[in-house]
Amino acid sequence: MTDALTQVTFTAHSSQYLDIWRQFRSHRGAMAGMVILGVIIFAVALGPYLWHVDPTEIAMRARNKGPSLAHPLGTDQLGRDMLARLMTGGRVSLTVGLMAMLLSLSLGTLIGVCAGYFRRLDGILMRITDLFLALPLLPLLLVTSMLFREPLARLLGPEAGTFLLIVVVIGLTSWMHAARLVRGEVLALKEREFVLAAHSIGTRRSKMILRHILPNVLSPILVSATLGIASAIITESSLSFLGLGFPPDFPTWGRLLYDAIDQIQLYPMRVMMPGIAISLTVLSVNYIGDGLRDAMDPRIRGRR
Amino acid sequence: MFHYTIRRLAMALPTLLLISLIIFLLLGLAPGDPMAQLPLTIPPEVKEKMRLSLGLGDPLLTRYALWLKQFFWIEPLHVTDALFGSNLSGESQRIVSWQSRAPVADIIAQRLPQTLWVVGVAYIVGIAIALPIGILSAYRQYSWFDQLGTLVSMIGFSVPTFFTGVVLIVLFSVGLNWFPSLYDTTLQVTDWQSFFAQLRQMVLPVMVLALYNASQISRFMRASVLDNLREDYVRTARAKGLTEKVVVLIHVLRNSMIPVVTVIGMGVPQIFGGAIITEQVFKVNGIGELLISSIQANDLPMVQTLTFIFAALIVLFNLITDILYGILDPRIRYD
Image (cartoon, rainbow over all chains, first blue to last red; front, top):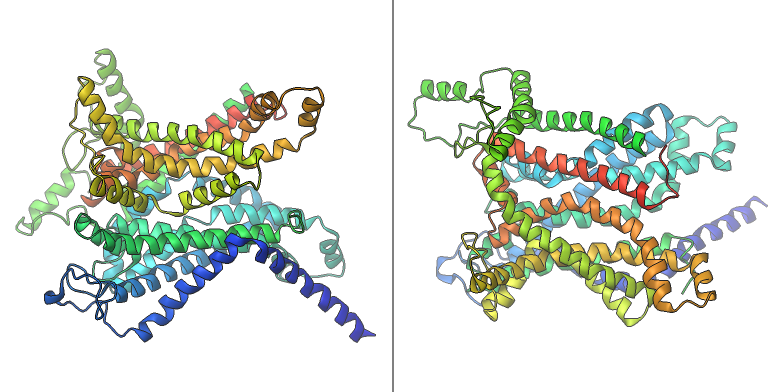
């Protein structure tokens, strides 16, 4: 009897995800985005194992070369291999995007759940959110990057210091939308019968949030996660583009583009390659987010 | 409505004060040293005197109070003096840039027209493109036009503006040589020829910003029109025998503009932020370029004033759009 029951709930459970997946698959843009993003992640993660060229090795005799067998995408103004630099740069850009998104989502979810669940915290937390939304983010990002880059670099080394700074700064300035979204969902969930039922059997607050509230706000979190990665990648590359991101010998896509701007008339391809990489990544992530939103929305699911 | 406006204004002031305090603390407590750029040959005691002369010896809160007084009292007095030829301000100390020793307000006033020209025109062009596209793709949902519009707007807000700018430079100024890649701010419009030169150099930056703005606004417009097309009043209007043109362009358009107007209003301060990058690409010496160059030169008074002006713009336009929303939509009453 119990076996049969769990069986039924299990299939009902999995079919919901199956529904979402089916709807997601019918979104052509999202599927294309998945494929393209998969290829980019694959190339960036495994590429350096297959292509053993040091991205920081300077070869003055092989400067500004076009594509050849030794350098499939050519070399830059110091003779460094562009393919290897693009792959390493992509690693950094994607990691920054992912980590910043994780930080901003955890912060946003924490604040959103607290504001939605504990009525006493709601007012103050939402005022703080409004305050953050009124801050001019890009100027502040630039200022913090300028002020804290060198002390942190001295403390942790140039790469780790800048990495930490950029991830933390992007995370701290992009949690507001997630917090608002989560708060709204939690407010609605709190009035539902299953929460009342859980309450009546004496579920503790921590358990209530972890077991009943969080799993149910997962879908808006997931959607804003994908959009968060996209905007974090853009922000990081904008910082690098303005010369306030990673140090010069440390390639990221934004930095590569910035370095190539000076010689754009002679070697436009060197600007195009990192630019296309950024744009393709962000575009496919945005399409995946779009598809996820459609797939998770039960009002849209089943239409079309 | 009036009470609501007063209440919001009263709320905006502490918000602005808090924001200015945050900015000030961020700049004041940062470990960086504004004297770090000076040559090493300057002896330490002279350096110390320079620090004191810049007011860096005072406690942080004194400096904050002084800045508040300068920004909210002395600078407006100077501006009225300049406008009306009066002499209210006398010999009072203004906020002075560390970089050029000129009053911050004067430099901003010099830079503002370039930004307003390029960014403002771009925003208007963006809105003018976005609205028809949004309406048409909602009216013909899932048609090829809608699909194409979705793709273009997806590309528009996925591709960062610095890359769009670079691609346009490669295409139109390096490849085809139609437009200049740099914005020449010394150009004076005196006759038709210089007017066309001005137009030509504005085309590329305006295109970049307009594409970015249009892609966002057109998505909102499409969603809003779609919502309204399903409403009962549309069916009533059609049943009365009104032509499609009247139904869509008068009944639906007016109602679907309400949320879009707020989106447009909220976007106004954001273009200043987005324009920082575009101005850098095309070397337009506007506000954004000023911010970047003063950040790089550690010019704290300038950075602080500019950042605070951006924040004030955001607060102001949020206020304006909230009030506008109440006026445009009679269903929303705040009192």
